[in-house]
Length: 270
Image 1 (tube, rainbow, N blue to C red):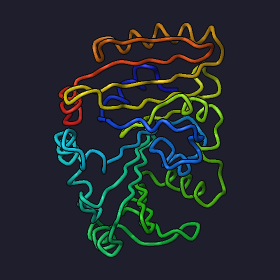
Image 2 (cartoon, rainbow, N blue to C red; image 1 turned 90 degrees about the vertical axis):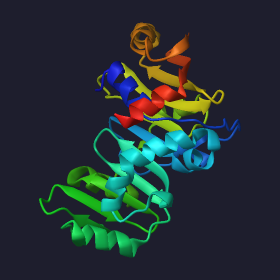
Image 3 (cartoon, rainbow, N blue to C red; image 1 turned 120 degrees about the horizontal axis):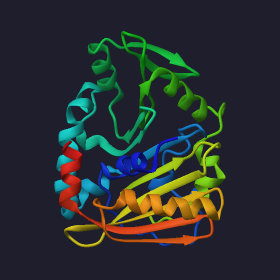
């Protein structure tokens, strides 16, 4: 299982800012960013980052962060035949899988993959392209691309086809998301069953033109484990965020803090 510091580092490498959608609906009855890709990934230990690229692109206050995102991803997307303006949402897991949603031109994607020595084929009735070394797959759907290691992509396709349970079905993930506001970037994770950290999630909202507010929710296997986890979390967050406030509610730890937008831009460039 990833350490708290590793989870923290994975969460702050990208920027999120968003409006809080304060409805009483279940997270799993909406199209909120936090659940957008949960039905693509299998129900196993993972940390999944989801970005609302449209929000970054369309908001004048966030556009400089979108520009940093373009620098990082533009060449990689070009190799897939995908134009930056076509990307609406991006999901990334620590297992190496990336999921793109948007208005892609599949003909251009196929041309780009062919030029990069990918071979076409199919898996579970889904169009898939395999790299020349056989290690990577790209699955091409109407409005979605899945890119990553062959075995992990196969698992994602099996989830899509209903052969494996999805991360969306995990009760612990659902419980942390019910406590989380919406954001333009959300990190969702599921722990190993042998560990005390069962699930976690972060979201980021715009506080003002220079600052973002983040909220994180951690669910532990009992109050004692949560109390120990709280100390570890505060130590890991020190130096990255400011005005940090952590509270415990039984087996839950909730953390709120602020971070400057400039710091995120620097991290995206690394």
